[in-house]
Amino acid sequence: MCSKEPQKIKGINEIYDQYDVYFIDLWGVMHNGLQCYPEALKVLSKLKDFNKKIVLMSNAPRPSSVVKLFLEKINLNSSYYDLVVTSGDVTREYIFSNQHKKKFYHLGPDKDSDLFKNLNITLSSKEECSEVICTGLMSDEDEKVEDYKNILEYFQKKNISLVCANPDEVASRGSKIIFCAGALANRYKEMGGTVNYFGKPYLEIYNFALKKMGIYQKVKEKKIIPFVIGDNIKTDIKGANLFKLDSLLILNGIYKNFFRDGAVDFDQLKKSVNLENIKINFYQEELSW
Image (cartoon, rainbow, N blue to C red; front, top):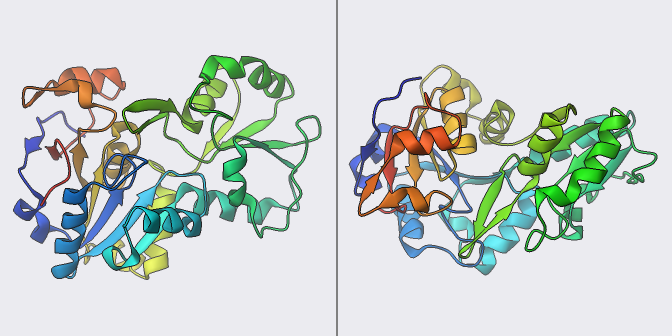
């Protein structure tokens, strides 16, 4: 990793021919939780015109099948991409392989119950569980991490491990910043609890996607070159660094306060996320062609 200043690009058209597969984040890059960004849709359309593979990758703690239905509602249909992969998909694989060994408790809102659909498991109470599956705050519009101090202390005293199904700490919903499962998981870890994370920046989600597409070996042999586009340094860009891939940081999401008058203080931005040596190859204010 190095601290070389990222290069500002006006559009993906300046670099698209250098890469074959695009790992593109959803929330903050393609949409704001309420509607799609028209310019971002244009990027997908143009990349498809040039026969590029597109993997929409999300730390949503839900199955990709559910996320696809949401994307349809905001006019991001399947013609724009090759695959959708979520942290929920990887978490479901873990739950399925451990369903006879562990008793799971769901810490999160009811809307995330799709995570457990068709897995043939019965969720346990917090008193009887052996592991917690955390998908987020029960009411992320008005709750804060501090509100979970008591329940996290309860699990920590019982030495119960926690699975984080969404490593994102925050996300932007419209103009509002909300806390995600990653914020709870990180607090639990600070308290001395054991946490397993599924999703970006961890390599399992990238390998999961590449194997689904049947190109894992070719990427390993560097016959196919992936590229990462995201708005979160701790997940998207760190994942690119761990996978040794080039990346593009989008600044109109959770880091919009660092983007002023067309300039970015990257040193301050990296310090704010405690990743001063992270490598960011390119940046845009918003994803555009």
